[in-house]
Amino acid sequence: MKKLLYIFLLSAILLSCASQKLVNTPRHPKREFRGAWIQAVNGQFTGMDEIQMKDYLTAMLDNLQKVNVNAIIFQVRVEGDALYPSLHEPWSRYITGEQGCSPGWDPLAFMVTECHRRDMELHAWINPYRARTRTTKVLALEHPAVKNPDKFIEYEGQLYFNPALQDNRDHICRIVRDILTRYDVDGLHIDDYFYPYPVKGVEFPDDEWFYKSGNGDRGEWRRENVNHLIYQLHRTVRETKPWVRFGVSPFGIYRNAKSWEFGSRTNGLQCYDELNADVLFWIEQGWVDYCIPQIYWEIGHPAADYEELVAWWAEHASARPLYIGQDVVRTVNAKDSAAICGNQQMRKYELQRANANVSGSCFWDAASAANNMDGYRDFLAADIYKYPALMPGSPFMDDKAPAKVKGIRLVEDENGKMLLWIVGDESDAMNAPHRFVVYCFAKGEKADIGNPAKIMDITDKPFYRLPQDMSGEYIFVVTVLDRLQNESKGVKCKVCLE
Image 1 (cartoon, helix red, strand yellow):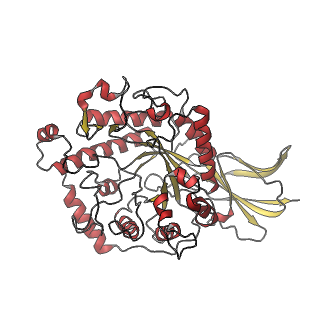
Image 2 (image 1 turned 90 degrees about the horizontal axis):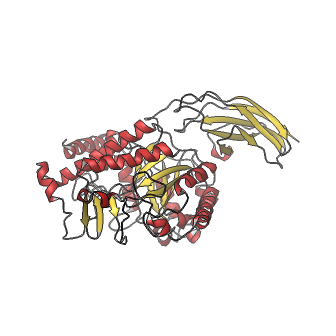
Image 3 (image 1 turned 120 degrees about the horizontal axis):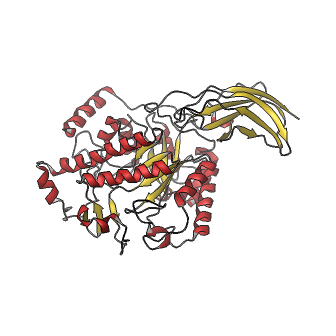
């Protein structure tokens, strides 16, 4: 496939026919992806016992729940290992300090339960190709690279699954199928590591496989290797659980304008050229279900301006839901004397929300936000994330709304009053009731379920317990969400509380 020509023609059409869709977005949109990455590779869990790690993660999730974060992207595979009991790869050393050593519990299962308890999605994050980081000294005997060393390539102190081998693609997809089959995850996520970040003057040693391929352009050949994996991952996810979304978080620069006339006005490493990741092609082919480019730089950065890159990705990558990867530390360190918060946090969110092609953001890293670095979390709670938000829809996967609830009534037990309703048919996995949204309106107020300020709760339970101090007359509206956030029609219930 001549993908470079394809992208060239596609972009020419986009540039000639499309313009930036700038909108007056509501201050508090009802639908927005609000994600946070929780990584293991930095060693934040290493040496913690089960109680310590659970307490640590629980506190983090509690703090993120307070600011209405609705998605956690949790790293479960760092280097051909696992933060869960895998049937194919050893336990990660990033828990116990020793690869292959079981911590005696299942962090992934714990995170799925705890996120869903807080009405957050859990996206399982894997690194596909990396098999050994620079600081890993010993691989476990059950590690794939110990069993089949000929399928791996060493480069600058790290080890990689050879991207040219179909056996490796099959293995990675077995990992994904295993995760999806055994865990109730909402998404499968890969990050920015494809072919390794290049070291100046040192070529990735894949001559043997390149010459066997008979392809005259090494970059095109490498990109095609990655394309095969992305397509196969897409098919694996769809075949295993068709409601699970497959997302990618690429490096923030696709191509610079000096390399490609339709590229961004930037001057940095390029996802397409150096990492051999043709993200736009995957999006246009429908192989990924969302994209979160890592636009970690500041507004006004001389080589990679945040404002320029948000606009560029919004124009070129909106065929699938687009969210913006934010760097908490760099954002709060970028001072802005004109801003209420004293840094670029508000300006970045305003730029994001002003563009109709951007549907949310994800911050790196979760701990920095949860720990309220420089008031980052406080500012989210006070304004940016003041009210809950539903996930953006995925109509290209499914746009059929679930059946509405029936028979809402007010009941009372020893613990107080609650609304109770009857749930509809659950036989269709794609459209079965997954969550319920409870809205509340004062007497005489218009029942506008488009207003997130009126959301009282998003719950997986077929009831809602009313606050004990609530009194007066109200209209409650209950809707149903399926797994892809399609929302049913609302059903009203008038309540008089004394």
